[in-house]
Each structure stands twice: as C-alpha cells, then as structure tokens.
Length: 202
Length: 128
Image 1 (cartoon, chains in turn orange, blue):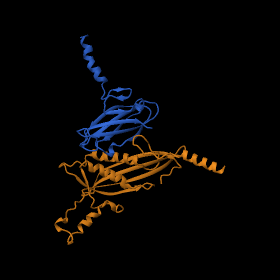
Image 2: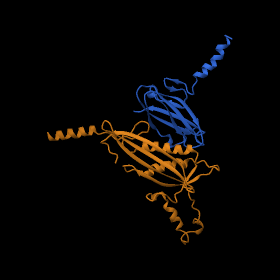
Image 3: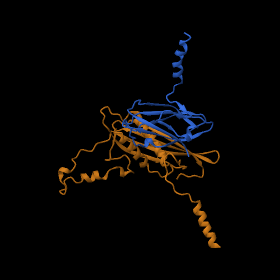
Image 4: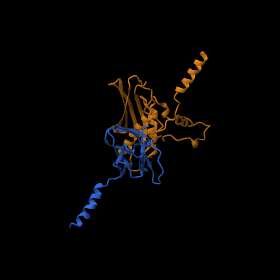
C-alpha cells in the first residue's frame, strides 16, 4: 500500500512539473521581476537608437570614432553582468561603421577582460631573438580613444496598494569627449514592473 | 457652375479622406505594416512616418490606436532592410512588448540600425 502511495505521489509530481521551454521572442512574455534578456534588448534598442539618431557619430570625413568603454555601474539589487548590455551596444555601434572600440585599455578596472591580453604579449616579442623582428609590431601604433561610453543601471522598489510593489529600472548611458571632458550625449531609458511584494529580485 | 461644383469638391473629399495607410478592420493596407488578425480588432496603426532628422539613419514613427475600452497588450517588431531587400540583423529589431490604454493613440518610434537601412517591415501580434 505504501509503495502504491509512493508511486502515485511520484506520478502526480511528474504530471505537475512544468516542462522547460525555449523562449521565443514575440511569443512569450517573461513574468520576472528581475532584469531579463528582453529588458536588456529593449534598453539596448532605446539607447543605441538614440545615439545613432543624435548624429554625434557622424563624422564629416566619413571616418569612425575610436571609443573606449568605461565603467557601467550595476546599482541594482541583483547580480547582473553589465557586459551583457555593453557587448550588445558595442556590437550595434560597430556594425554601423561609425565606431571602432579600442581593446587596448578600458575605464573599468573591474573588467580586465575588455583589454585584449594578446596586445601586451605581442609587444613582449620585441627584441626576442625567437621572433622575426620584421613581423613584430613597431612602437607607437596603438590608437587612443576620442570618445568614451559609460553608464549606470539602477533599481528602485516602491510598495504599492494590494500587496504589490513597483520596480523601476533605469538604464543610463553617456558619451564623453576625451579631449574636452564634455558629455556629448546621454540617455536614460526606463523599464517598470509591477509584482508581488514577496517576489525578490536578488 | 452647379455641374462644376461636384467635380471641384470631389478631389477635396478624396484628399480629405486619404491617410497614409487605409484600413480594413484595423489591418493597414500597406504591406509593410503587418497586423496579425488576432490583434487587428483591438488596435490599428493609423500613421507611419519615416525621416532622417539630424542623422543619416532613418527613424520610423508608428502611431498606434487602441480600439477597445480596455487595455490592449501586444508585441511589435520593426525589421530593417537594405537596398537589396535583405534584412539587417540587429538588436534594434527585437520583438518589443507594449500596451495601450483604453482608446489610447500613441506614437512609437524605432530607429534604423545603420545608414544602409532604407526600408522596413512592421509586425504586430497579440500577446499570448
């Protein structure tokens, strides 16, 4: 009898399990209080679209601006790799041909992976007899950035009526002229969610 | 003059009725604006404009109108095509979720991902 109950419990549990599904854009809306991929895409779309539409990246000589990636601060209550946002913006901007991103340095000390480690390795081959010196890069070729891209993601939670809470996410980016230090463009995009107070985002 | 008056008024009437996109049950006539039947009775695109402004990339402004007395949630996506009609892959062409309040009419903008984008395709469908 005990075995029968156990078997029935197992079958019931299996029947109640929600099967894992692939998320298909435009078909499913994720019901999540935290930041999900759709939120990042929406933010990237708004921010990149605004920057492109501003005309700031249009050089009269048709060339591309060299951009250094600065710090993107995660000021939310959840673990979120800001490089997910940065990489998508970088990809979009680079694809326009208006921007070249330097991998020689970064403004974010906490993101050493943004600097290409092979640059230093390549230069260490100078005067190494094992290397054909005519193939080794000459000094003074790294290109400094004329613009930088940095930003911040912040979160605010406010209790609302009916045992719910409103979660406000702000994605803010800015472009700074490296010669003058002046902020040439900035944009903040907002994503709001309403959820149960019991739902935690961290 | 009495005979001429209707002839003179006819073009004015036609022009007055003309909008950038005609509609049949909320479905715009422009083939580039695809509103799925599952949402066509709830909302429609009443206007679409494309301009470059300060930049060399197009900005598309779509004016949506909710035909219902309650909120309508929907997905939309703006794809961008190059001169040869090939789609330009971009995060800017991701599906976006949005909602309109009762009888709300609101413009929604989309920016082309590059100067190579010269045409667009809008898809709208109901949230499931």
